[in-house]
Length: 144
Ligand code: SF4
Ligand SMILES: [Zn+2]
Image (tube, rainbow, N blue to C red; front, side, top):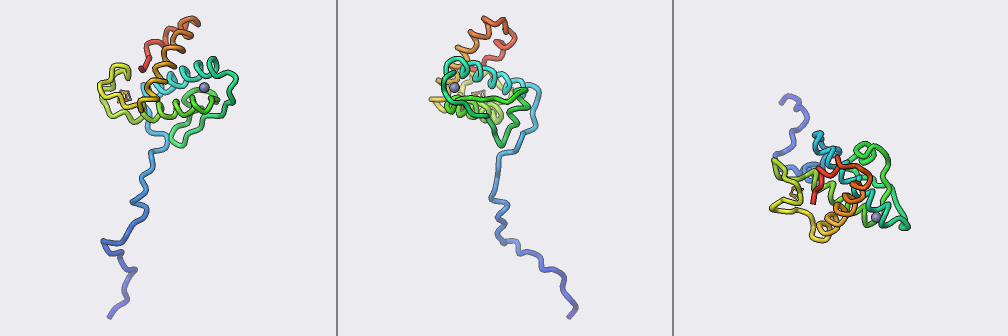
């Protein structure tokens, strides 16, 4: 009998790596997606700076998104606003609808109910403040 090469793995061998399905890091981002995420970050930032100005803030960092690159600067939010923004980033990034409607007109709003109510409050409040600052350009990107 001749020498055998390395034994091929049997077809039924368990492959642990196949069980790990992480979210893609920094998903390929269209200009529209990047702009929507930046707008979301701005609205939550404006809200948190004003309504939660005395609350402790932490740097927003995600494994799936480079928040600093998207927003153009480091973003510091209170705990509640950080959770809300992360929820909104994930929902917006992995939105299953194509073409995507404005979230406020979406027939299958995918936010968890508590986050949906809060993002509506944030968009309304920050939208009004941005109008006062003359930032009408952002109002075309209201989500909820
Ligand atoms: S609310 Fe609708 S449009 Fe907005 S991210 Fe969710 S599924 Fe997409
Ligand atoms: Zn806040």
